[in-house]
Image (cartoon, rainbow, N blue to C red):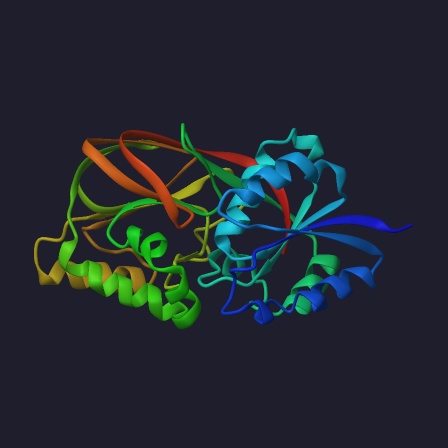
Length: 298
């Protein structure tokens, strides 16, 4: 019996439409008993609407694109009752591909990724939510470098790839500011001046920073909360860089905790990013995890 498969395709992923090699992925599924129905996502948020309206009618769902379309796809799944959410496959074709790095999926190899979806086992994947804003797949963050990923021009991303993020980050160095913040989490309360804060469920952030593999569990209901205090001198700046690069986080300016919820309170509205997109500005924001929200092949 032929099985149904809904495939979401982001034409903007990669450097050109020919890079997508869509035919290779479609034929791989077709040769393995699936009848793929292809939907094109034309703008941010399109995938959310398409999935919410159609995905319950399919046995499997596949997203071909970058982390942004994947985030929109999962947001659409979260709009469905849990029992009606099809298992999700991801064919990573974007710029940073943080989720693909975490799941161990091959980048920009549609046929290979399709084969892994068919042969792989589904992982119970936790999904985050910014109260009043929306869901996030792998990270919600504020502060230094968070504007880089969603304010870097899309054409620049396609042309330069990871280099676009690096260049954007270097340009932001001179404008880094700190925020007086109170952070409430499962283990207590933290206060101070922070230049960066994030709640994430990923080994990779913006394709550049990796968290410790032993720290991150995608299915434990807890996200990692990384906080960076304002450094007082060059020595503390070096300790931050060393702690992050070595994945030891041994610096007076670095704090890493695990929690299923976090509440941030600021003394002014602070801009946030959600899965690399604009998450709005907030003086108070609560974030929490939904454990085992979706099943994703890895």
